[in-house]
Length: 120
Image 1 (cartoon, rainbow, N blue to C red):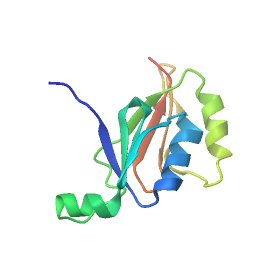
Image 2: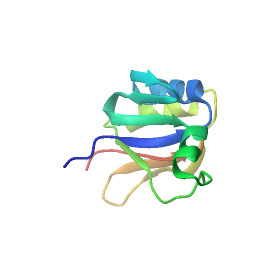
Image 3: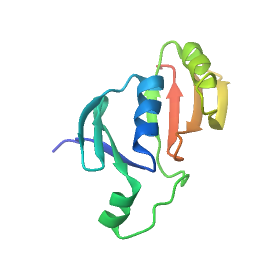
């Protein structure tokens, strides 16, 4: 067995595709009926489909999981993030940890938590 994909619910597919492409360089691999598979295995699903699938309300900003990315040039990423048309809602501002790693946590446009950190 292996983990195939990570799926997140989104309210505006076009906005989410642009967000993940512009900031993370993820491209569309497959798009079909409210589902979009991006490179690196991230799947975006229209929130209405997800609600139907699980028969429950979707709770954004629930802080129980995050998408984790690493970037050797995190300062350039922070600059790109700060210049993105929709200002980020930071959870953890750009921080340098005592052992030298740097990180930032913020929400995507739908409240899915993202962490970007320099490699260990």
